Amino acid sequence: MKKAEVSLKFASIKVALVLIVTLTLSMLSADCGWALSYEAEVLADNPTAYYRLGGDASNSHGSGEDGVASSGVSFGHAGALADGDTAAHFSGSDSYIQVADSNAALDLETGTPFTIEYWMNVDSHRSNDGNWHVVSRSDSSANASDAFIVNSGTAASPAHNVRFHTDGWAGGNHRVDSAANTVVLNEWTHVVGTYNGSNEMALYLNGQQVALVTDINRGPGADADAGNVYFGQLGNSPGSVDYPGGLDEVAFYDTVLSADRVLAHYNAASVVPEPTSLALLAMCLGGLLAWYRKR
Image 1 (tube, rainbow, N blue to C red):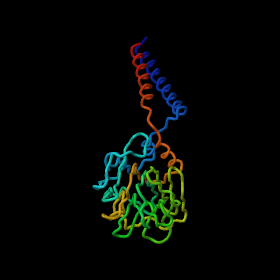
Image 2: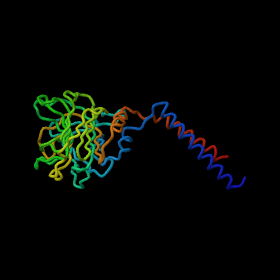
Image 3: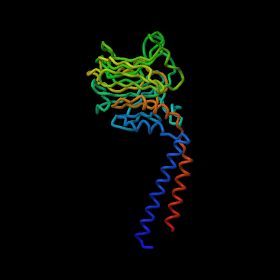
Image 4: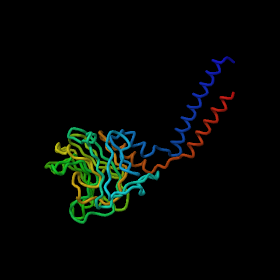
């Protein structure tokens, strides 16, 4: 057989093998319930910043800058995901992560849609009508905020809920609330807040939309551009009351995540990789290719 014919035959065999493996993986995914990992689902939506908080406060995707953790933040704790990735814990005293947004990658402005996503595991409720600030983008010295998400205190109304604000010091409609007692202690909760850039804000807990406001008339504050992003406290307020609990997988997007995508992210948290099956499949493919090279 001529060399060109052999090369063509071998190329055809490789194409056929790739098709077989692709179809096999597709069938296994459907039949065995294989799914994308949580990280893969997040990256599929192209976040502007993604802080996994497994071993430090670095950003793993997008143009957001790395964070700096204070002394009350520790890493390596059991996280929200079934794949074993770890999380950060905030002691509640001098416990926050600051992301200096000097490149304006995380500016959240009126007219610009965005989504904020994270997992929290709250140690305790605040005893008064104040809030634990979990994620914020604000400049409290200017009484202005781009956005922040908080857990309300015991004396608040409604109490023990999640609140997603745009400009929290302004009048008008600028926030969306979950129902009372939706912050459960010592359990991981998936939180997503979306803003369409004009009149609509939505809040999701554990993959489900729990609140929607369609008459928002006060977006993020312009003066907040001088502020930074903080996890665990209100922006630019060192020494303020700090959030106590776990935090994991914080992501920012410059788009509005759809309800389907929010649910896909939540469901992916329970996905455990199948390395053994994939390794065996790869070994079989390698063996077949090696066998055909010898022919």
